[in-house]
Image (cartoon, rainbow, N blue to C red):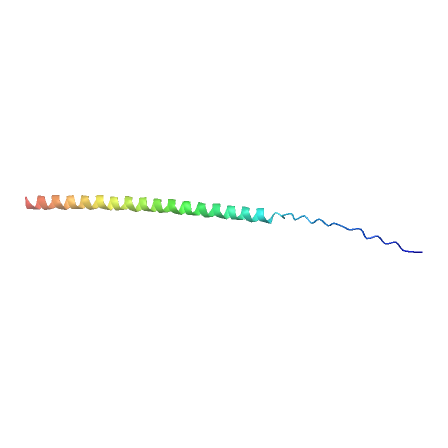
Length: 81
């Protein structure tokens, strides 16, 4: 009895498929950029609000100082008469 062995060539095809890791990394990066932009926008808005508050307070102090000066001037004029 003779063994008959036939070697036939085999072709192996390997397909590379992405596991979705690239999409996940891009999504995480996009979310991080959005959160960073949100905080920067709010920080700028808060600075504007602080600046407006300081400006308003300075104006109020200036108005009060003018009233005190006017009152002192009137008192000095009344004392001189």
